[in-house]
Length: 65
Image (cartoon, rainbow, N blue to C red; front, side, top):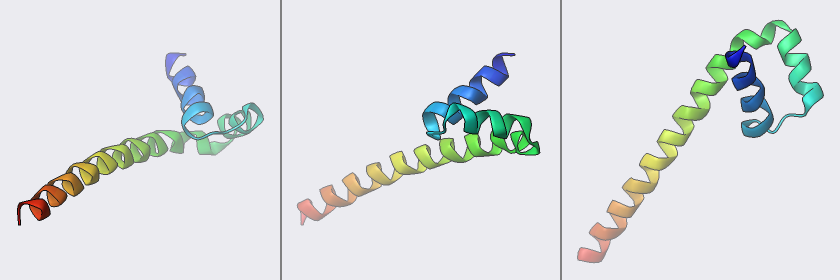
């Protein structure tokens, strides 16, 4: 039950879907792919954070010259 609520929250908030869109996905066979979508969004956030850190380091290195 909690996993279902987490999936609904993920689709509504993180993916920007409508309630009807969430209903369609949960009723279809695509609901099994939701875990992969959640993993991809987490990976994207981590990648974004790493890129920001790397760009700050590069800027600092350029300023040292």
